[in-house]
Length: 290
Image (cartoon, rainbow, N blue to C red):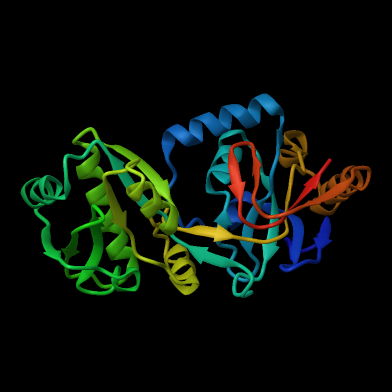
């Protein structure tokens, strides 16, 4: 539910139950870091539009933001008090959690990258025949690199998945310093890029569990950008909540009633999985307000 004294704007029943409400911006917890250049661009876009297009996705129990970190920070920068959110039960089995692999273009091979990581980053990197995805993020294997023929494991003494992901960030930074082009792909797509020659090396990252996400967020720490990939079926898009409402210092119940009345005049269209909307591909079905 939303803050005390308010009532839901909307409840959408589907594979996942979404309770749409306005939340205090300062009541939510991030689990991924903010990228300054992305935040600047999004802040300018929202200010230009005059409204927040899409609600953020929040775990109702913990108030951890599953999708929408940059939207939250953009609204803070724009002087807002509230954010439109979909509250969900994170442990609903229909909500899937995956990870993003990194792909690199411009590498002359795996061995030069391993030498660079050993020399410049001081990491222990060992070649091996194969690394399975489920081994990554389990001590002592923090992450792995492959060119499709050989594998290299980055070995370290880390305590948890947050520690493993800290090493992912260090490796990513070290390889970016070589001028390599970096991309973010789901596991299968990353290896497809490799097989088609559109990438030279894939960095295999640790898979997270939902409890890892909540635990880190509530501890005040964050994972690197693009650590998690949440698939949340039936999420609503294009609520288009005006900044005037999100900035307002008025009773929350009154503000939510205004949003509710506005949405009641619009048609809700259900879209199948695989839709590409504003450059983002949604693997799950979505609801669009028209």
